[in-house]
Length: 382
Picture 1: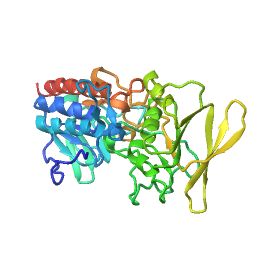
Picture 2: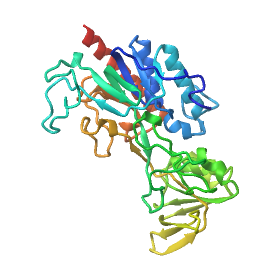
Picture 3: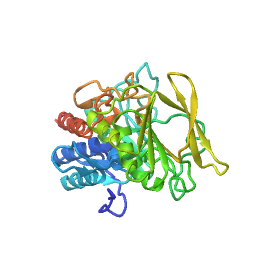
Picture 4: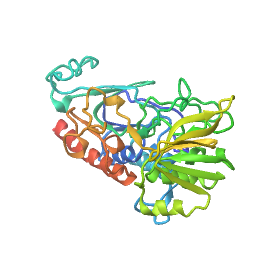
């Protein structure tokens, strides 16, 4: 299902200053948009051209409340978008390229010149209630009194030579992937690389790529729930799936781990680290060099596909130098609802969550951000 199935033909940027801009099209962003629009805030969602966040790469979601039979990830995101639009939010298939923040005060000594160097019309000492930020897109600039940064996270890579194609990954059909991190929870796809018919053979989304590896041998790297989901998705298509984990124990929930262990054509290897990719003369993946951590010995594992599921990196680029980062690299909030030091700027979802990283907690964070923004706007208009 496409999340843009019933969307308007083209984006129309508002010409007046809006109350709130939500940057991101995942659970946090859509929920924030729903609550803001229902509170009669003039709300714009910059959902990028590939919205939906990590749920777009998820099959059946079984733990989101209200769906006892489960719901397909893309369908859940499509419903959230429709609900946001029904509430009155304007949803644009545009990414935020950069943001000119207004701080409502003098520039910080820690980041000299950050406050107003790129923000025309705002001068030091502006009261927080009158601060206006500018969100820059490819189609123009949106002026807004408040911002929800719900930009999500991107898959972490192994960092091996040849893992990605120079200049960016390639998807099946030769379409270049976008990895600018600008487009919210779904700002760049996680399908990383093309399948075996002419691509790199390295991917980050089994739901997206598994059919391309039908009847082939593949490997999955990781030890958490994401890795288990990858194995389960691949098991319907691949001849054999090798699950490789550097640790001795798995972080995955017992239910998912039990399902994986029950599959007859899945081989589980703990204490294994992928050290190199092996390719033929045409550049196709033909195997992995795998090290046994206990002994230091290495073996060659013949596979035609590698799926990496070792976590995600928060997409913080739009806030670099303006919003502090936590020790884990997530955006740091300083108040209720994901408030930051910048007036009217809130963070929500995986970009700020280093602990739970669930669709329902992201939605809750989006709700909290919207409620705090509503109060902020009421104070600003008082």
